[in-house]
Length: 278
Image 1 (cartoon, one colour):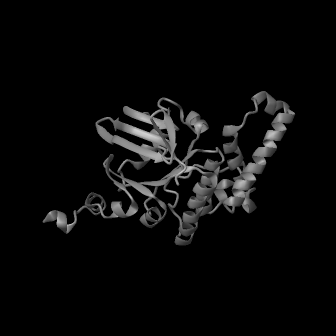
Image 2 (spheres, rainbow, N blue to C red; image 1 turned 60 degrees about the vertical axis):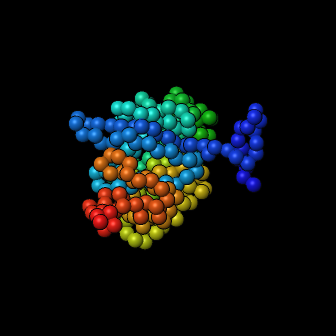
């Protein structure tokens, strides 16, 4: 029997519960000059889900990520994290509330060590004051030790601990991608947005990435939204997919439903199926 529940006649009946929503965007639109980059975008991510956002180049996918994370503010619409509006908040504040992201173009601190890249992200959740850090109080020292231990655990999970003292810029490309995901997880996110995590990876690295993304979702209990051009990866790991074209949602559903949708085929190939032409 389901552990969910529903309200009925003044009491809660066991067996049904509305699925909680980790992240929601409703009616979100954004224009740059006369260009409508995103139009009436709506999305709900159930807690613990692993979903995909796909579309041809220029469809507006990264613009959506920028709207969800506060880099851009929508012209209209609502964005909620855990039921709380995050409109108007700075990206750093949104990160502290529980949303982290990676970028299509890797944005590591190249001069810092692999370990320090992750430790720096851990400080998003740090409680020590600047004065405490300067004076090296007992609380500050204990928190720094906890941060070091947490960062090392993440690096071990991502098979990067043996390279912890190397500069981030010196890592191979695939390792830099994994370090960026580890750094995002260091902020203890409730929602993780991955922008092209497989970009530049070879086939073997992509296979490892599939397993890693699933493991991150399962072990950390984080809700994941994924932008990715590698359709094999998307169709393999995502439970539900939303498809954008020219800033508008043209399809949503299971991987199979999306693959069979004539609108999606036309958006990617530029032609409709023969059955649509006749």
